[in-house]
Image 1 (cartoon, helix red, strand yellow):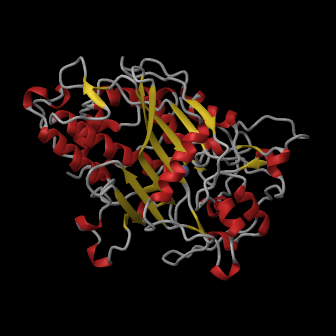
Image 2 (image 1 turned 90 degrees about the vertical axis):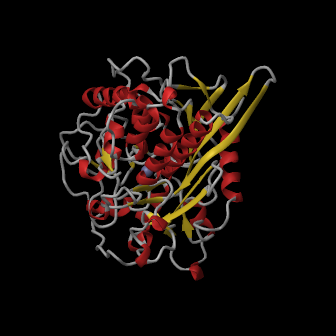
Image 3 (image 1 turned 30 degrees about the vertical axis):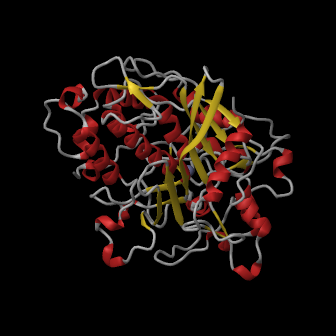
Length: 463
Ligand SMILES: [Zn+2]
């Protein structure tokens, strides 16, 4: 069938073959990688075909003040999120092919009028080169993991904010803190965020383990959502609470983006296709497994973050279900991660820093590569900001327009019922019209994630 190493190797190779644009500078910059793999199991031919259909790199997330009312900026450019959005772009094209009578690798007509099903033998895997930020990255260090690095010390100093300047997050931290970064999945702004994390609430649930054996914790820079209790921030194992929803750290101001652990948990119940494509699908699309590259890792933390937190959700609409994600780790390390980059680093090259660009590649016929920085196409001039040339093809508005093209290409008689006879105009309207999806989201929020922040509606009213 497939092994975790085979999947990791496939993703690293795919990345290697991409053009240089947006890739980290060898020996100085690092990044993170995630991908969606299409697995086609043909029992007749006794073959299993594996193909990367979407790949993402990136470590950054923009703050609230930079968000756009036009849906034309990528708020969250963590690799996992880029890979998921690229996959939605790929799936939209696959559905377009299906509705317009061309062959699709993924979809066949469903039993319900206007709905499409995944072909027999087809499934999707999710790969990420590191444990997702947030809850899955919080676990005790073991003796072997802590070597040769020292344990994390309580960080005393707050890094000064230097918005608008190129920042070298690594350089401003003490050596011990820099080591600590290797011990966690670490997205770029996390170290800065940890220094800002000053609130204290010792009453939270924290990890329980033998203090003699394991004395320190892998940390995440993602902070607990503001409406709930904060981390205790005590030394060692009492630094973080566990199971909490967390917001990604950003530059300067607070972000509204949930951690990758939280988003993966959500996709595990609602599917990763999003609200729009759910109009066309007979059932939500769930990842069959999540494969993590070689990095500090805890199966228990992954299980808790991605599965256990939602395992008791009941009353979902019929097609939705909470299936336990299979979680596996590969022994192969991403050659551009922080550890590798640090090992190869030459001081003449300048300070080590996270790569500012995010690469999206997906298996579509036109412009599969989409490289962004700060949420817009990389290299775009200031003058072009706000124009369609500056937009990423995986921005909300571009994905929405691709969806509208799919709707326009669908014969009236084959239009999903949920889109018939309604006066839908904005992105928000189309999302809300996906009723079972919204009902499932309501149940998930009520039962598992009551503190999940509601994003401002005005950010979704574009058309
Ligand atoms: Zn993340």
